[in-house]
Image 1 (cartoon, rainbow, N blue to C red):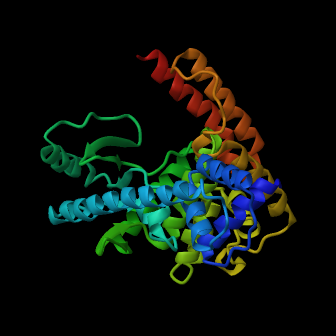
Image 2: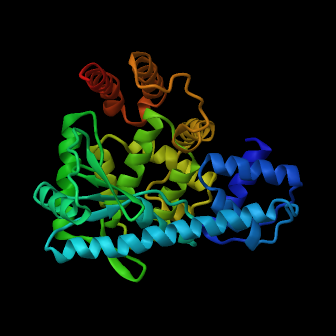
Length: 362
């Protein structure tokens, strides 16, 4: 581990678990730390830790930290306000939804206001999806184009929404059926709510909240890269939900989806890099988990948030881009085959065929 990584992990552990930070940095080291944190979309978290612990970073960097904190707080305030209006509006129509990721994940942090905001993702089952779409279209005054993917997009009051008909794409059909079924059943029988802006927002129950956070992160790792921000989301969800989480049910889901190995590997990162209390993790780890965890950790630090540290040679969505993307997925699926063997055996042929059809079908 490099000194830069050690510094970044130190400030993140301090902010995530609200522990004292004893760190001595030169102005150059502090700037490198903030730059690296930005690559992983955790600069506001790092800035908050540095400011709260009065770490000397040089006068020139203080405004940068204060701006990162304030700008992120304003972004979260806007999203939270819109979500606190949108979700109750949909429910007042007699319709159901479940908000996921994003602002829900933020509620699991010690300081939700410094988690980088993005868009608002929510899920509707097969019964509610077309009805919610119709209500939204009337509200925004335009038709939302249908999509062959797992979600459709629309904007409202400066916020990007993703409305999901399925939460994630598995590449082995039985896994997709299992996941879809347990999500729909759970939302009917044991829904969960979190407070955002004083409003109860519907979301997934604890076991599926943790599961989806992991599955979403893992597939991002394979398809384009994932940074430490999404690993922080997983750590914070496990810690915040530790008293409500049915660990037996979570392990049952992971086993059914063939994803236990990968989850355990990331557990090693959570505990031994980010400082998650070991008792918050639903497995006892071994040396094999440690070896896999180190492999995943190296990939996380190399890629950055959504792969932003990797400079792709081809940006335009053409045949060359499709080939390059497919080769990247192939490489990652081989490297992390033992994390989820069945999914990794299926992802390359399935996704390559999908991208080829999308490209040549235009």
